[in-house]
Length: 496
Image (cartoon, rainbow, N blue to C red; front, side):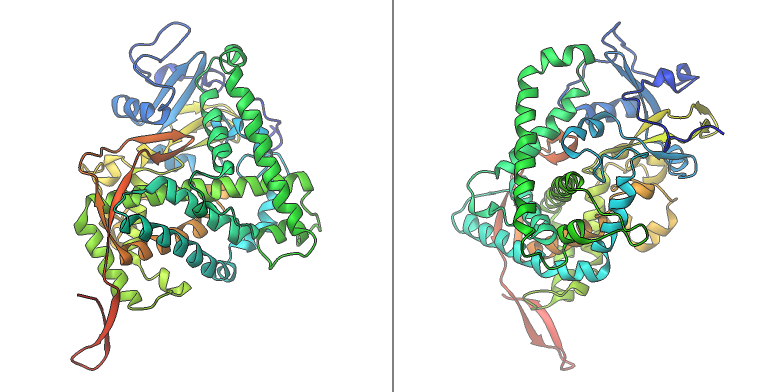
């Protein structure tokens, strides 16, 4: 019997020539340069957006070569659905994800399939995202959002526009730190980003840069960046070690860190080792806030650009929440249109813009393209979400009604994948969706969002995606008050 990829050790970057016997049938950009590959007209700062351009040009499966590394990209819905077959394909840890292993090791996001700590950590931590656990996090999410609105009130009073990506990063970092680990970074009391955020951005950016540098030249060309990356990793490790050390003496209240420290696997009795706990904490602090902050930032950008959408979402918030100062946990899921706004923003700009899949055994992708065991491909989520065969000829346009219940039921499976796919899809996706929906509801109820007329969306890439330089002006809304309807029942209305 052939070994599966779960049993096989990782082999580093496997160029496509090793795994795709009929690679020549897959198109590539027309102006390929000897040795350098497909580098004309591209930027090391925007590999995702460059790949999206090539996807439009070359079709639902294509390949790119950069300094000897050949990568197959897939974005067609039929091929992506085939890759979602867990019996034939598994997560592939490669490219920028593998470059994060020096800091995240065998954490949930970066573990290789054969490493046992992934399953151990997943089984131990999954109850931390149950409904009961989520309901317990809700008050802390509200408290952190109140710190954001206090800050935005001050900026609005002073007549200043707000830094949307910067403030969403503060919000989501504080939320995951407080709910998961009982830690307060004091982000809103700082005039500059917390050093943890700077170190995190540094490691993500360095991991992405490694993808575009020829392997033998990387130590020479990235010597200074490598030193900074080592310092960033050391800072992340020190910060997390201090958080864990502060917890051990008295214990906490059953959050994620308590589970890591005190919970044994329900069947085997195994516990997470101290080094793995550090890696899991780093994974949650980074992944738990970086992607959600991007999702919120893109959603606020589109709400500001589409006042009719914002008005409809705001009316839903007023109707569902009324004059309640602090909406309850169950009231968040009732904001169905607000959730559609969030989903549509994640469709156009999934903040985790791609995920990799590898063949568990020799197979044929889409009944056309042979793949050997271990061969892998990158699913370009940002293009999958724009496939006109699924989303229509207006797929580039922002329209939250794509996510009304009838439209969702009519679409094929595996066409919307902002959190990855399969057994190793994001464990915290319900946490992120609840947090983001709650925050959007609270901000819509409190503010009118006014765009800068001169701003044009620019997307920054650091493995994740974020709108760059996005600032919005705010107008405070009158608080919602209750009036008696003609039938005598209470009706929530915005104050005059």
